[in-house]
Every structure is written in structure tokens, then in C-alpha cells.
Length: 240
Image 1 (spheres, rainbow, N blue to C red):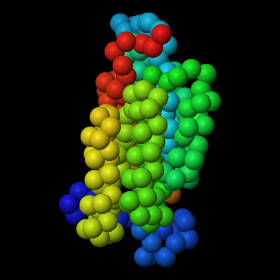
Image 2 (image 1 turned 90 degrees about the horizontal axis):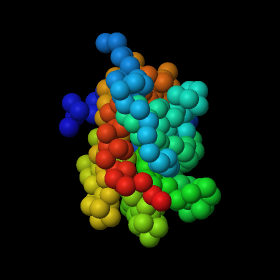
Image 3 (image 1 turned 45 degrees about the vertical axis):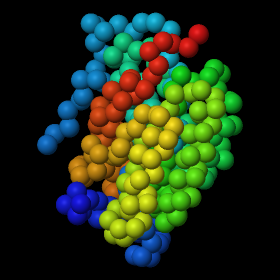
């Protein structure tokens, strides 16, 4: 485990300086040549067809696109990647920088109600800022549980983007936090990406100088690593 997470320790230290916390405050980074993933390149052999598929990307700065152009945000690049696969996708960016799971919960139902049409898929990506602020894992669990209960009540398929706690927070904290996402995915029978940042967290060249947020290339890598999960989570039949 130490080998797996040790590259993030410098990122955690940078995050501490950014938020003005002491070195004892638990923090988390929600944040070779980088090649353009094939999933991002438009293909004449894969035309966009069929009814529009609406996806709501709900999260924090990792979705909002902190310090990158709007076209380089995860939702925008995900939409392009899905369309390159022939899916007539429209991905709405409902990311708000700085959102904890509590802040996300406060606006979750309102955001769903505000959509022009019911989404065919909701992607939930929250928890990194809970770690940054050292919030109790039980609180994060309860907030995400309530959001998943809401999408279940509305019969909206959901994809949950998992986060992981750094080992310096202690074994008990890590176990409590890391179990949140697989437990809730199992409880609500939703699709899960176990660790959203898996493809970039060890690659400093894909992380901005703040040592927290991915660069545009880093976001592209995240999309390439998760677009298949999103495609699988979309219902086979478009909503009427």
C-alpha cells in the first residue's frame, strides 16, 4: 500500500500549503509523452447516430475544469469521446469547485430538477474535498448515500466515481473512507469506477503546478480511462 500511494504525499503537502492548513490536517489530491487517446479522435468509420443521450456530470473541481478551458473539462472531453464512439451524447457539466459531499447534496435535487429533460445517466464525483478538510468518513458516506437514494427514487442510472484516502490519515480512517464507494455501489447496484484518478495520480506531468488538479492532458487521460465505464453505464435503449 505504501508503494501505491507514496507518490501522492508531495501532492498532499502542496495541498496543505494551498489551503493554509497545518501539516496535521488530512488532505487529499482530488486531485513519457502523453498521446491523444484514440477515444478522443473523431472517426469517419464511427458516425454519431440515434437519439441524443443526456448525461449529467455532477461533482467538484475535477468536473468543473479548474484552471483549464471549458472545452478541456472532463464533461466536455467525455462528450467528445462518447461521440467519437458513435454515441450522440450531451454531457452537462454540473461540477462546482470546492464542493464537499455536503455542499453537493444541498444542490443535488435542485440540479436534477433544473435539467431540460431527465438525464439518462448521472455521474457522481465527490469526496476529494471531504478528505482535504478532514471530514468524518461517516458524513461523506451519508451524503453520497442520500444522493444515490435520490437517483434510485427517480429511476436514473448512476455511475459513482470513487476516491481513496492517503495512508498518512491512519489505517482506521483509510478503511472507513475507502469502503464508502464499493459499499454504496453494491447497495444501490450502480456502476463504479473504484478510483477516478487511478490513471494519473502517479504522473506528475499530468498534474497542474498546484499539485492537486489535472492538466488538460491529465483530464484527457482520465476520460480515456473511464469512457468505457460511462458507455457501459448508459442504458442500452435511449429514453423516449
